[in-house]
Structure formats: C-alpha cells, structure tokens
Length: 83
Length: 83
Length: 150
Length: 150
Image (cartoon, rainbow over all chains, first blue to last red):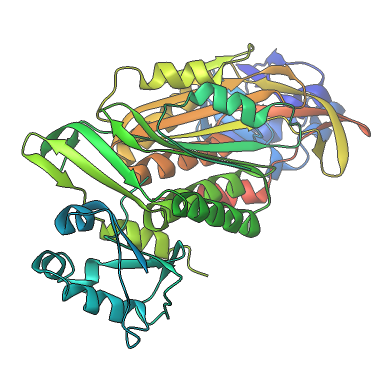
C-alpha cells in the first residue's frame, strides 16, 4: 500500500511517501495509523496525537473506522489550512 | 420652502421641484405631505398612499413627525430601489 | 475610503488593483458587483434608468460606509454606484471591503449592499416588453437590512 | 464552472471579465480574494509556502463547487487557489459566484471559502521573524464551516 504524508507529518516522518506491506489485521484507517506508529520512533512521534492526524483514502476525507485495502491510495496529514 | 420630487412622485406630480410658501401650522414632514395634497389633483393622487411616500429633510431620511422649517431642503420620494 | 456616484462605467479589475495596491496587512477582500438583468418579474428588460438624488446619495453612502467601518475592523471600503441609462449586462454597483479577517470582509460587504438597497436614494425605471415601469421596493430588501439592526 | 490549482498568479480583473462576459441574466457577482498578510500571531511574516495534495485538491474543490451549485441557484462558480511560495500582499485564492439574486451570490461565495478552508488539502508553512512554522488550523474555521452543515 502506498502512503502519502503532507505538511509537518511529512517533515517529521522524513519522507513524502512510502510503500508498506499491510498485515491482514490492519483493516481500517485508524488501525493503519496505530500500525504505522510501530515502524520507527519518527513515525511514533509524528503520529502520537491522532486528533491532528487526518486520513484520506483515494483522495476523500474518511473517518478512522473507514475500511482500507492494499490497493487504496492513503494519505495522512494535519488539519488543512488553505484559503 | 424648496420641495424636490423623485421617481414616480416626480412624474405623477409633473415637476422635479417646486418652491412653496408654507403656512405656519405645517410644522412636520407628515403635515407637509397632507398639505401638499391640497395643491392640485395631481399632488393628491401622487401622495395618496403615504406608506410609499418617504421624506428626507436636508438629505436625511426622516419620520413623518420630524419638524420642518422654511429653510430646509425637503425631498419626497418612493421607497428606494438602488443597488 | 472612496465613495463614487457616477454615470460612467467602472473597470472592476482596475478598481480592485487600486483598492489593494501596496497593502500587506489585508487578509481578504470581499467584493460585490451588481448588474442589470435582462429579465425582471417575467418581462424582458431592454434598458434601465437609474435616477438619484445628487448630494443626498453621496451623503447616505458615506454614512453607510462609516457605519461599516465602525462595526468591523476594515482596512478600506469602496462603493461605486452608477446612475443614468444602463442596459442588460451593464454594471450598476460595486462594493469592496478589505480586512485582516475574512468574516469581517464578507459581512461588511453584505451589510453595505443591504443598507445601500434601503437607504441610498436611487430609483430604477425599467424599459420592458410590457412598457416602462418603476421598480418596486422589495420586502426582502427591507428584511435583509433589518438583519443588521443593532 | 472552473476550478484551478496553480503556482502562478492570477489577474482578478481578467478573471472577473471572463467570468461575466456575455452574461445578461446575472444580477450579482460575489467575490472573495484571500491574500498573504505580513503579520500572523504577532510575528512578522516574510513568506508563506503552500503545500497541497495534487489530485485530491482539485477533486475536493470540484466537490465543494458542485455542492454550492446544488444549494443555490448559481449561473457560475470560479475557484482559483495557488500553491508554492508566496510573499505578503500576494494573492492566494479567489472565489467568485454569479447568480440572479444577490443573497445566493453572497452566501455561496462565503460557503465556498468556509468549506475550502476545512476541506481542501492545503497547508501553509510560514517563514516568520521567529523561524518557520506550520500554520495551525483554527477552531473558528471549523465553526464557520459547521454553519453550513445541512
């Protein structure tokens, strides 16, 4: 699965994108965030406060209970600040 | 006193402005409208419905109980429709 | 702050450019441009003539603009209103407000239009397929202005 | 309807002219232009870099614009949003809405800005006198967007 990071999530994790092999039990957006925390201390720190970690699946905002599958494009980012 | 008429009040009365000698007892905007009705049938018809006859004294909107004096510039017009 | 009542047209882009030139403290500019529609009350409109009360018009627009500046933190206010004969598609009015904050810009711009519609001494005479007629004031405009009563 | 996400600047006057060209059924055009301010949170800002999520940005803006057209009787909608490095006074965003009725134009324009601020995937990195910092989302923006919940 391809994961994209934006804004300070990108700079804290250190890469704009990474491809991960998702364990079968990681089936929702929220579970993905929890699982990503275990990848490195940088991930753990960047993703520590899930209140400010938003998830988009296939370029749509989704809640944490939204299902994910390995063919999805998943993006993690802080609350948006455009306009 | 100089009176100005605008929009359909002007076209119904037939003149854009007229100068009148105000009787002493005509002391408010509302009394002026009543008194003007007596000047001609055109005045009477144009000013018949006081709900749509607005008054400005010295270029400020005023209610009918507003005092007037012979040196004032008084304008009568329908509800405004600009913008 | 600029208030202009004029017969001639105005250029929205040039007005916007002049309004914002050199400003770096403005976060948002809200604008409204009112145009002559080719249809009104079911009749087609070929022209519209705007009559106004010279002197009082400028005075009322100044008062309304000052009131907007009193109510919202604005960097600047622009009001341009035309009079005379206009055709469908022609510009009638432009209001622009600049503020550090977008809510202040949006609200003051709408306030200015709502108040202008009920306080500025303009009257519209429409030339329609059914003849000439003076546009009647709308209750919805009075209601819109009443929203802003303090 | 036009949605554009671009690094380059835009010309408000040219955009307005193109947006309204040849239209005679429009009674009002509401516009908002957002600009980079030279001060934020008490610090002076020398530049701002707007990062976005290509693909999702356009998709979200299209969705928001379609939603505006569903809610109000609009003749047209324009949304332009820049990304990349900008300086104080630079334009960030322009939204324009055209309608027969001014309330529809005003409300849909504000709706678009409010939703854009909470839905479009843009992030601002400010270069300030106190160093670089990512702009934090404002609760007031969430509250503004919540106004429009159906």
